[in-house]
Image (cartoon, rainbow, N blue to C red; front, side):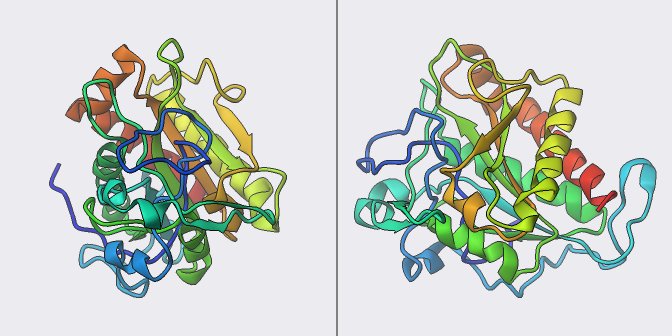
Length: 288
């Protein structure tokens, strides 16, 4: 699938990785938060574009739901590919403490995890996000991104979450892959809990459920080590905490599991996951 460079906005949603700072050469290997993907808000512009810019491929006639049903009005989806390729070279920026959305702080971001042979989570998230974007734009959905390349730093997790309201997103999806112990496998979808806003209640839970159902419908197994039945309520993900729009974070399998690593780095596996995520988003948009 051809990669389309995304229109980016200084935003924040984090997912896998760890909640504590890491060295620039360390690869996060836990599922505690996709660690903020960025740097300070000022430096986040290195990896972001104006939130008012739409992709030249975006359509305006409305989104198409399951079965080809045209959804009324223009829908906006914010995609947040976790971490970024420049994070490892900017430890001072990504280790900077930022608000976590629950009166605490956490690191701006992390490097993310990787497969045992070095395929990085940030690269996986970037590839899949581009494919999800193309799938959604073909149906008329306007897609915004929290970063516009895989070489910059950031943005920070709090910034990513705040972007959801800035761009008036109908839905926010953060894309990650986990770094859990190698004997664990399967995907899980996180949402902010307990909710800090109305949108973090039923709207976010139903979005997470739609994504879970689509991933499972694509034949992907739910996690054996996190959450319950593929859903994971989380209070520690700053990107989700700051989002004031329906938001969910997908941990697309475990990069440290040998079998799932093969799927995550293969074009066929990436396309399968991207199609499932796009399908879940469209199914949810058709009802909201």
